[in-house]
Image: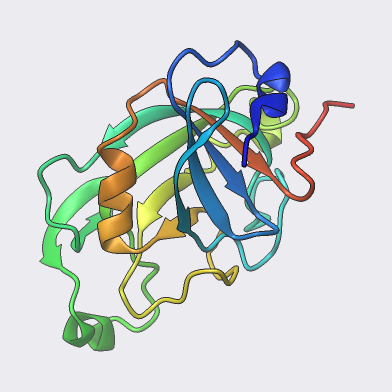
Length: 184
């Protein structure tokens, strides 16, 4: 499988590995600069579907860049709140004590939109919406849209992704047929 055709839509041609989230497939791909698949993982995107509007609970589409890589050295199940570790480690018992908590575990890759009017600026700004790729509890299913807008991965898998990217890495989120959003 090759996604080289998508690089033509990038804000700049990728010169390092980059990430592709295919929402319809509920899958994250690590791609070479040439668009060849290096690795892939199942994910869980937004229960509310795709969309860019603030407050929608949707996963935003289009080109993004990793703004910050947070959590280096933390346990795979370290709990984060406000992008800071709480000192807790997720367990089923902790989950029972806080059943309504939206768990962010292990690592955070904070996204910044690259497309003005699509996912950057105004009421569609992915960074201000706090859209992340992040770890989620082991008991959360992958391949099913259940998040509040972020892209969730299993704890060990977010560690794998985190080890292969850096701040500045390009990320494309597509809804179907790999069509990026075009600002209207």
